[in-house]
Image (cartoon, rainbow, N blue to C red):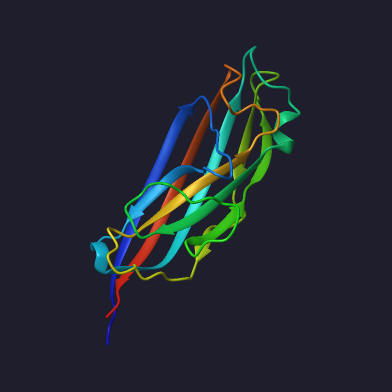
Length: 179
């Protein structure tokens, strides 16, 4: 028997954000995929590519020591509903699919002394090979990709005016109709 498969792909960019506040109890949703065929689709696997850039420049900027202590983690969650809420990244849940700590890198500006960009990126894409079949009575299975940010300074909470945050999330999901 051949399994009927459905693929979905999206790119979700965001530019010039003033803040990214994302505690572990409420990760920021950066991508959302609903099953293409609705409640008959089972989630099979995903591939997620993500990077975030923070541009620092001007007079109202955080001290340069803020970024080495800041951690950014990507988390993947399954839901039986069409909810865009990303589950709590602390604890255990059958809906947790995986996570990945991003690696920061600081790039000084070539043209303006004191300005710089901090890029958080993956060392490789987030991949899952775990499947989820929707529960009986599910209202639209979905995958959510979330961002957890530990910002100890804090610099990414809107305190400083002269920084801008950009990110891009590319999400590929594979769904199938299970007999």
